[in-house]
Length: 512
Ligand SMILES: Nc1ncnc2c1ncn2[C@@H]1O[C@H](COP(=O)(O)OP(=O)(O)O)[C@@H](O)[C@H]1O
Ligand SMILES: Cc1ncsc1CCOP(=O)(O)O
Ligand SMILES: [Mg+2]
Image (cartoon, rainbow, N blue to C red; front, side, top):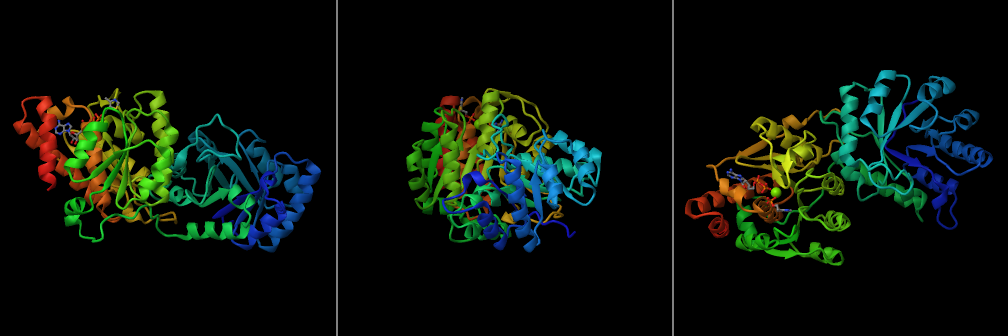
C-alpha cells in the first residue's frame, strides 16, 4: 500500500449534517476536493448502520484511492477490509489491535501527553503508524471537557518528544478545534524544538461535515495548507527602511488599544502620548472590530488584572483576523495556578508580534520555570539561562520575545514568517538571533510600578510603525529607546516619584 497522505484528515460525524445532506454526500464532496484520509467515527450509531455506512464509505474512498480508517470498531474495520483503525487511550490496547489487524493495516492512536509518546517509542516501529495529537483547542466534537486544550505549544511538546525518542516512523495529525482561522498558525507554531519535525496533517470535522458546500470548504482548507508562509500581520510602515521606524511612529501616530491592568492604565496612556501615539483603554468587546480597523492600530494585551479571559481571547482573534499586530505581556505568568491557566489560554489563542515579560515571566512561558513574587521576578537566573528561555519563547510562539531586567534580551523568532511545512528544516531555538540591550544599573525601574507594562506600550507603538519583516528591529529600537530614557531620568530624578515624571519627559524627548 502506498504511504498514507495525512495532509487533510476528515473525521466524519453524521450528527451535524446540514438539511438535505448525507454523510456520504459530504464525504464525496470532501474526497473530490482534496481530503487525503478519512476516519469513520460514528459514536452513537448501531453496528448494523455503521457497517452499511462503512461499506459505502469504503467504495468512495477506494475510488479516490484514499485510506478509510474506522474509529474504535476493530471488528467492523476487519469485516469491511478498511485501510486501518484508530483507537483512543481508553480503547482496546494497541498491541492487541495490531495483533488483530495484522502488520499491513494502518493503526492510529490518540495522544495528548508526552508519556504516551514514551510508550509508543517503547513499542517501536510496526505498532503504530500515526498519532492524533490534541485536543489543540476547545472542540464540540470531543466532549472530554476535563482536559485543558494543549494549544500549538502542546503539539510542539509532543513533536519534540518524538524527536528525542527518534520515533521517525510515526506520522502526526493535529486534532481538536481546528478551523480555517487557526490551522495556518498551528502549522507555523507547532514545530519540534529542533526544527526538524512539523505536523504531517490537520484533522477536522465540522468545517466539512457541517458545511453547506463541503467541496468549497475543502478547497479553502487545501489552499490554506498549501501556503508557504504564515502572514499574520500587515505592518504600518509603507517603506521598508527600518532606520525610519521612530519617524514612522511620529508620522503614523499608532492607535495603541490597551487591554491592560488597572495599575498601568493611566501611566501607560501618558507613555503612549509621550512617544507620539494615541492610546485607548478599552475592554468593550463590541468595539474591538471597529478599533482594529482604524489605520495603524495595534493591541497591547496585558494580563495583570484580568476580569474576563474571554474578552482577551476575543480581542486576540479579532486582531488576528484583521491582520493587526498584538503585543502580549503575560504579567505574573505563573504566580498563581489561576493566573497560569489564564495566561496559557491567552498564549494559545492567537499569533503575537511580540511577547515580553520580566525574567520570571519569560522563564515561565519558556517551560524552564520561573520564580515570581506576585508580578515581580524573584529568581537570580544567569544571563545564559535568560537568553535560552527567551529563545525558547521566541521559537515556540514564532514571535519576537523580550526578557527584561538590568540587561534586556530580544530574540527574533519570526523566522521571517516562512513556515517550513516540510519536516527536516533544522532551525532550532538555539539558532535564533538575539540582541542584548545594556545600560548602567537603574534600580529605580524596579521601584516604580508598571515600568515593564509601559515598555509594552512603547514596543506596541514601534511594532505598529514597522512592517512584517522588521518586527525584530522595531522591538530592539523600542527597548533601546525606553532604556535610554530610563538612564537619563535616573541622572536627574531625586527619587522614585520624580523618576516617573523624568521617565515620561525623556521618552518624549528621545522619541522626537
Ligand atoms: N536594574 C535595572 N537597570 C536598568 N534597567 C532596568 C533594571 N531593571 C529593570 N530595568 C528596565 O525596566 C523595564 C522593566 O523591566 P522589569 O522590571 O524587568 O519588568 P517588570 O516591571 O515587568 O517586572 C525594562 O525596560 C528594563 O530594561
Ligand atoms: C502591581 C500589579 N498588579 C497587577 S498588574 C501590576 C503592575 C505590574 O506592572 P509591571 O509588570 O510593569 O511591573
Ligand atoms: Mg511586568
